[in-house]
Image 1 (tube, helix red, strand yellow):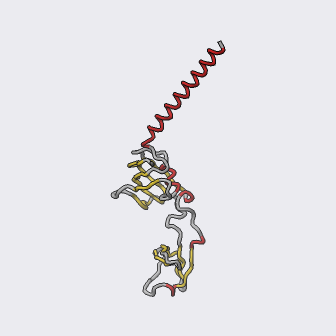
Image 2 (cartoon, helix red, strand yellow; image 1 turned 90 degrees about the vertical axis):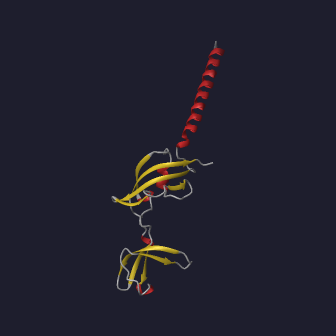
Image 3 (tube, helix red, strand yellow; image 1 turned 30 degrees about the vertical axis):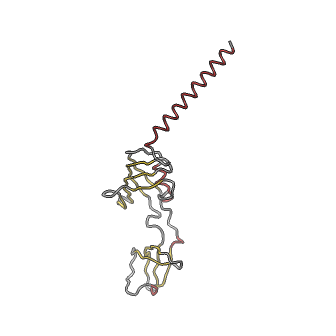
Length: 175
């Protein structure tokens, strides 16, 4: 009798494991239309900040990226993981999940006489600034005085809350 109970238990456990394994296989196969890390995806999107549209794929090709390669801000990528083809989603990213907080060390004061004399610097103007190593950086004029200008090298969206509307257009699974 004990042997029959043990056989029944073993059979039940084997059946349960087999059933769970089948469900796991079905779930994996059914997830081919779900975004995973490493997948290449095409995404239609709209980015708004303070109710102003900052960027959008409307009228253009969808954004095409491979997740996990640092092509996107981490918060945006995290929101795409688990979405399905055709799914639409709206989400908000804080500065910490977006382009970071404003870094006070990313401001530099330079004498006005270092600028091209024909340039009339104004607050908000974007300049291309060369560095000693030969790279070029974009900076926004933050302040203008008689003798100096203050340049802001922060990303233009640093410190901003980002609102996205996205739709997954296509998913190409990682190999």
